[in-house]
Length: 334
Image (tube, rainbow, N blue to C red; front, side):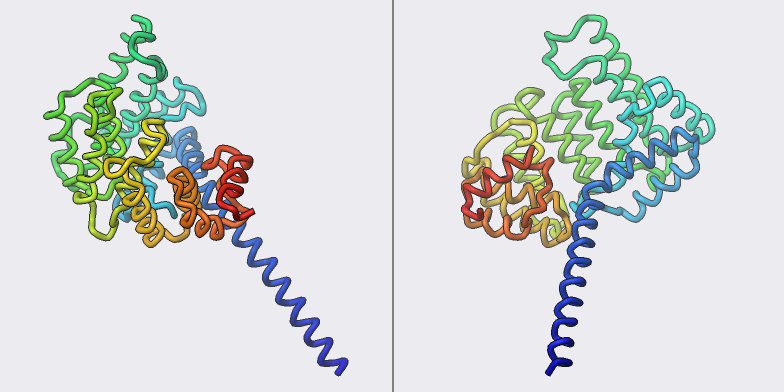
């Protein structure tokens, strides 16, 4: 009997230890997922600072050909190029290193796209984020000059289409908005982009910005586009792109509540389900799903997702743990 009791106690101890280890691994994995994009951006800027241009060429090629993604479905290629918008070592060094890279690889589409991203961000740094009437004449001049510089890097596609870069179209869509392209010209570019790679989320997030009333859209334009985008992406994506578009617009404070049918929680909810099916390890998507369910007043769904999140929320999504607890209390899970 004593031996049986000892064996049982030992078994329980081993189970608790394994549970502790597994929980630790789960928390560590969640932290790694949260930090993955920041780590990639740091790695890219470090390689640029160290003038390891060959490694950067290979990294971009790998991300494009393999279409690798993060757990939330975001493309690593997009994060790779977004890195060049960050003047971590200062604008002068960033632009000088890009110039050195271009001199070493004059036929590289990668460095041209990276340079365009940098110069476009440099233009925004001069302009600021306010309305046009808040920008000084001098800064507006810098803005136009720098955007024009960005355009020069990416306006021409390589002679061989197989050498083109998926992200080049994304930068052109950004530049088109900045330069105020008319709807016909912008739409032609967008159709070229989705023909080249229909599942590249960045194309859709750029176009929806163009369609916002604060830019060049009319009332209802971006909502109509959200529905149309679903037909452009692969069927395997389901309603995922609808959710991505609404999330991008919500993050820019363009809507604060759902209104069927033009701003549809029903469709967005299905999109979150599709994202969860395709990218089941995304803490980011799960937390946004839960938060938007709360905002939509869908308590049943919120309770379901709160249980999946547990007490390990993606705090950046909730903008503070106090907000997370507030919504937990609303849902009745604490």
